[in-house]
Amino acid sequence: QVQLVESGGGLVQAGGSLRLSCAASGRTFTSYAMAWFRQAPEKEREFVAATTWNYGSTYTGYSVNGRFTISRENAGNTVSLQMNNLQPEDTAVYSCAAAILRRDQSYDDHRLYNYWGQGTQVTVSS
Image: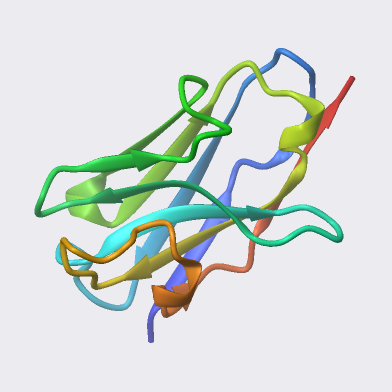
């Protein structure tokens, strides 16, 4: 059974940092793209960052570029999101996702991801 389990969310003041982790289990994820998406109340799901293991590529959403960094460890089964200089607008539920994607597919399209974690709350106070 495939499981994605996020950890590391919490409450932080503006300008602070948090590190989220997602542990994947149930199969070998080296062929999978793994990504972070977030969703704030009454807003659409937003792409945050993605990484591929076999291609060695990373992608970051425009609103977090330069502040958030995605990385992958543990033979590809753990993906982390380092979030620096957090702002109140970063407040959301952050979810980890996994999928096998072709290089010509859009890594920021949440509809292409078929495995999801339960999400972890990140709250940034002003």
